[in-house]
Image 1: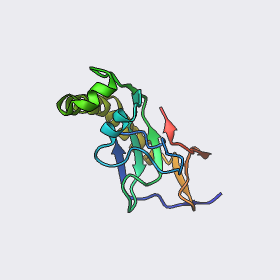
Image 2: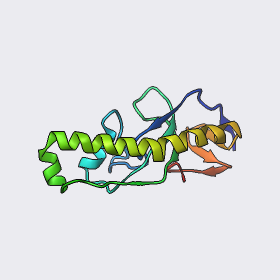
Image 3: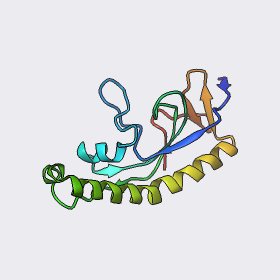
Image 4: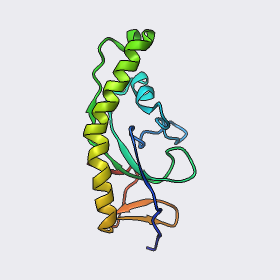
Length: 139
């Protein structure tokens, strides 16, 4: 198996980028990923690391954090009706996710890259220690 050169930039994103819709597109990309995941009824949130490319959160997926439980202050249908409460809930979960997800997997990803544990094949598929990682390396 031959591998390609690794990209120069790594990003951390507050969403589980392994969650895809039936068309295979990532569900939670962009700035509103935490809000989108909560409104979709996700019960857990994860952070992801990925190599950057020209798209929005579309590069090769490297690592997925351990999950953070979604704790809603009111049922989801009520939360949808109250923008202020929704905004506070999203900010609180994003803060939790930064601490338990982003700040854990980002340095670990960089460490694994520096150790040569990540590789990409010619198609941009990610390998860890020579093993294909279809949905990112999970902690």
